[in-house]
Length: 262
Image (cartoon, rainbow, N blue to C red; front, side, top):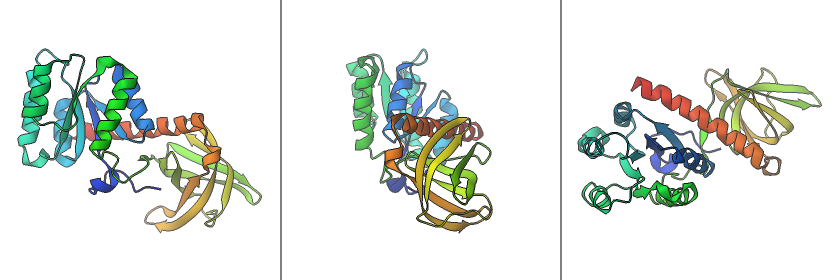
């Protein structure tokens, strides 16, 4: 599995992508970006986001400049973050319903935003295509191929029937291609073990697939931590969608808490 998100090595782990005050069409777009393995968040609190960027400036934020009564507030907001030494590495893009050439020139030429001036009235599919190209140009994935989420211990569990009995445990981290997991005491399978009909319980959503234990190590405080890769042939589109939906929901919930504390 890929290394966890949130590391300081953003070239390896990519950038968090925020949509500030997203219009309705961005809901569909954000889901498509998550399916493309970008780490996507939404928020409607620009003050909390500004404080969060002081802790993690290497993010790319798309600002809906149509929000509110005065578009100039977003010019000032972006400029203030650019001028702050703690957040000068933060990157920005613009989303809007209005194809205003004067505004485009200001944001692109004077402010020098990296994420483009994107007119979303062209529809979700076209907007998604443009955003994917923009995110790839900004290396938002980094070297990471798959986004993964840290799972609260009380939110997930798994089970797998074997000839030796039923294996159970909880999921520590989850991606669309695998997981790191803790098996119940004394039942950790050896690397190379195939787990047929492995049932994941993701906060009430069940996903049944096959997996292979590829390694394990002693993790401080939780015991043996095993890495399980899912067999691609056992993961159809429906199952992959369920995995990604849970990952995105978990990441957003974690981010909401982080923004509340910012």
